[in-house]
Image (tube, rainbow, N blue to C red; front, side, top):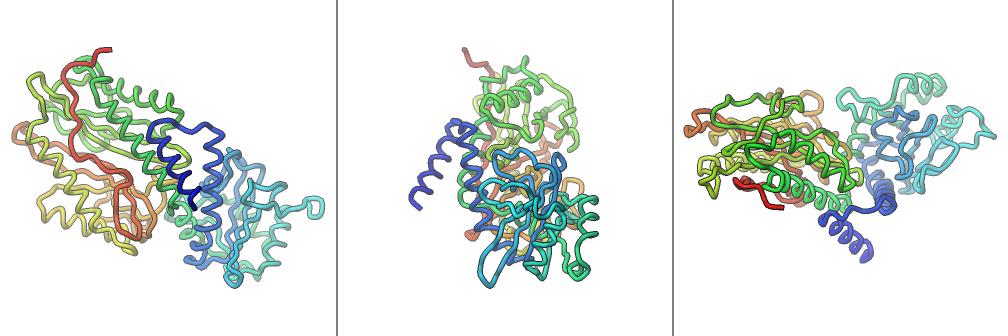
Length: 443
């Protein structure tokens, strides 16, 4: 245990200092996390969803989104047709991790197919099923979650053609199991996550500084591409193209689509502008998603105007309303409805569009609103909140500014964790507008 804690601290420190692990070290961490997830997380999820056998099938370059998260670090894709079988024995409290493949899949999944003895891969799978005789067999078929709907029609049809009739009525959707696998985080993952969010914040802070922005010269597109280049230089990746947008006194409030579009044009940043970015990075198979705001000081200013400070605080207020309504087993739609009602009672013009975050940026789990579905989201919004899960606390509140003669939007997004002790931000949140001085830093 002491060695594990020391490793966690080491990982946290290296990421926080932007000393990104070398590829070989990343590989070790990824595979260690996978082993923990297979041996600790998966059995609990199979028990929770009452699935005895989970079969995941995919072919090279057409991978099931769930299978992609199960491949070892040295496997960048599936090979040929890859079939994984997870068999849970409650009586013996064991879980078998098998591959109907010619070789082991890393150190965690053992090959269970000898092609010389049984040339037909499908029949080899059926032999495994018959021998274990599971009461329920989960397949990745889902109406609501694309990530949990990875079984393609060809593979499904071929499997069902060879599956004996007495097993066919045991087939069930593995939707809840697949979503649980994708959304559930371990302690080691959360230590990494905290540092990854800190790195995300650090990149934004530098982007929204005099080191990058010279008012009257630098454009929003310049900042976007600086962020992309910074991520590349750190040896990281972005999972979506960042955006930077401007709100200012002499322009109409931009609509939601324009603010978050990477085709919203490139504007020169000026003194007195209110800036907003949307930015996320990927590392060790985890993803961040962050929106923060900054103000470009005018020549005579040393701090942001009080009316902008007060407006920003309303964004924090809306965050507090939303996260106070997190409760295990509550659905995304229930959390959304309560939060919007409370926001209205507190005089906020709110919009909430919070989504799960983790192995994917827009991940699987309870959807808590979409920007164009504030009345609830059928399907994904009906999924309940479970512990040990992460969310992009994404929202905005529209604030009328008499000083500007118009409304502005305070748009924020931060990674938040829900666990047995309640809600916490993965690594703090923005509480004050970042300030960009009027002069560019000297080299």
